[in-house]
Image 1 (cartoon, rainbow, N blue to C red):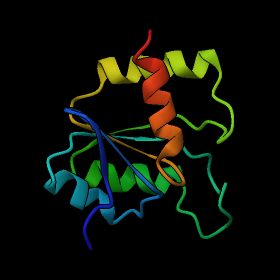
Image 2 (image 1 turned 90 degrees about the vertical axis):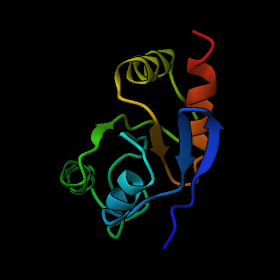
Image 3 (image 1 turned 120 degrees about the vertical axis):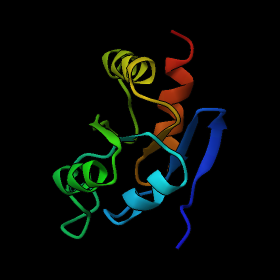
Length: 113
């Protein structure tokens, strides 16, 4: 299985919902950090929890942050938090949500700050 990533910038990519086993693939692909923008169980009980994703990321040697945001609206505070993560986390960064669109919107908005 290859990671379904879309490159947004030289050090930032997005992906749709990932499974815990994808964290090892992300590390092997050269990513150093992962941001999960999806609220726990937004997609139902089969969606992996942030705790499961964090454990898998840690086991793969990745920095991991959970910044859950609504799919249709990202507040100015959430955008500012995302900017802080972009500034502080080791790069390159892989962010994911349901489809990758939410993480892309956050990146674009945070890039204006």
